[in-house]
Length: 359
Image (cartoon, rainbow, N blue to C red; front, side, top):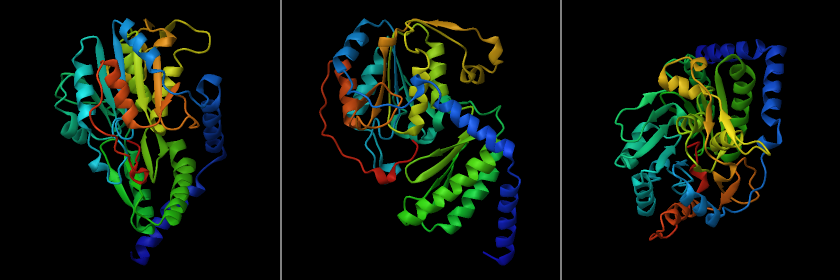
């Protein structure tokens, strides 16, 4: 890099830092405080998934929602994300569940549409959400719907420049540019230096960029991701709940921070003591239909609180907004097959957390 390039980039970053105001500090603090308010939205330890209770509610329900994250949930973690392919048991479970007319099955992933098409596209009755809810494809459809078309995406070039700056300072790191999000990966970098640079970059993004742009910053395992604040996995779950208000059962499974948005969305429907719920129209429903959010009407949910099985993959001590936990992706697939009265045929393949992204 030439001295002129260095001076230009440093000047740009210095301008960002020095223009950050006390108002922005206060706005960010209030936002964080609001996220922590309310016992229902506080992370907690969880019991192991009660498969017997889940099977009972599944059998009783006349309509069911089954919503799954991909990496770390349906497949084990691997060092190379492109190698995370579904097992035969996983594909069999998804195919059989989606073939039941009572079931609505979606995979809600951080992966792009190309990857999902390649490995799961033959499952015609499965719906997909790609890039954390930025794109959707309904069951039986062939085309993807871009939910970010009407959003301001001008921030991507600014964030890209910042990520390129840190890439040059961090050997082994790289930038992954998707259609509606951008991720900086440092899993191949020196662990200590990569973590230090990540914290520096995170601080810059959270204090100088996020308060001024319609974005949120996600800290993953060995990566930082920036995405539109109006679109996330939680919004997709809200949209599916709103569109399927007559559903009486939901099994929602995920394993990382991006999946907590799904668990938060489900938990907010039934605060303590509430047995019936009326749902306001979510933003994602308006984006998908191309209408104003105010033109949509609230719906009465048929689902009882006991019909919600939000499940995280991890230890019981893991802090989560989910109600239940299992210890591995293999247990998720086992649970899916158990709902079908089937049994797994393949052995569990342990994953390697070093390669995990927000997927």
